[in-house]
Length: 505
Ligand code: KIV
Ligand code: ZN
Image (cartoon, rainbow, N blue to C red; front, side):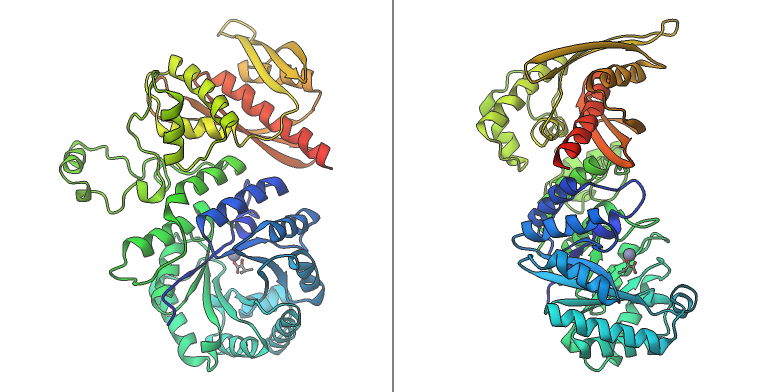
């Protein structure tokens, strides 16, 4: 049997459809490029018939990806499949992913169809999809709660109709590892033509067992897992990509399989997604959480100093986790900075390095210790930023328990500097109002969060905001040692995205 597990990433489809995780087309392209760098095999880019935005994203991702297969989801109707194919047809490796529910509860109450009608729809649509492309995946939605004999019958029929991947989702996150593993084994034993298809699994995390169930499935013969970065997805999410990959990687002794993933890109992928969506990663999240490699208890620290493996089953470097030690200081030169960025995986052009170096020296004046996490925050702010209509020049804020908060903001648009002041309910509110006066964009601030990039009183604060404009959400982020400045920059970042979006339209 194949000794490699295919990683099917559905961050941009199942992940993106969950509340608070929506991304616009440009953000999806940025994430898709990172997923390709990460080394996933398949990117599910969206559900083309669901909306114009989804169609456009799938189409652009299909055109952009060089190595990955690009999948588009469709129900089992000709219209859905045609739409998916229209978006996918320019991909180097297109995959049509078609699905229908096979559990009695879904067929009766949602689809209002009999078993034989569902079987017929599945076969007809797989055959039709196969007439368009050779790479066709079929998913039996709610497979876990389906009658096993019926499920096996459907799987056998869709393989005969041309499906090369058959996906067994635990749509409602109901299964437990032993049960799910033996289900995969039964499918392997009872579906006569199963050797002509790859068995895939897609586990939701309602009981917190998404990763455990996926691993049990792999141990019983599944060779594709569907998962998402940071485990985002419907309700409690999907199985987390980084946890599945690192489980396979770390427990080679029990799971003698490999993936194509470059594990050193895991942390960066997680951070990028979090920055694009504004959905923070919980501090104690396995593999990519801020505390994942932090050893707090004295006895642990002592053990670590004597021999790292006493308390560390994998190294932070293996997942690209920024090291928590001091890496650079006030007197570090441009060359050292470029070298450290290269070690962190960022290749900066000369101009980018100049910009980043200026910010770095200003930061080093304010902040004694500079950590990798600070360097990443700087580069994400300054290099991967979007085209800016308005550039932040400065801010002055008056605030206090007995004063009306007042902010004066200075922005630049082309050669012109514009300054405005405003009062507000608090310093951040006053700042946003002053920015609104200058930009004349009437966006509504719908979410605001702040966290320290590193620890210590002088840590940079990272602010992520979400604004709503014309029923579309835009994220903005920025970091600074001054939290009001970070708030101003994050809000302006979101407003510039609104303006960009209007220009693109
Ligand atoms: O959870 C699920 O069943 C799905 C399918 C469409 C694969 O997302
Ligand atoms: Zn799902």
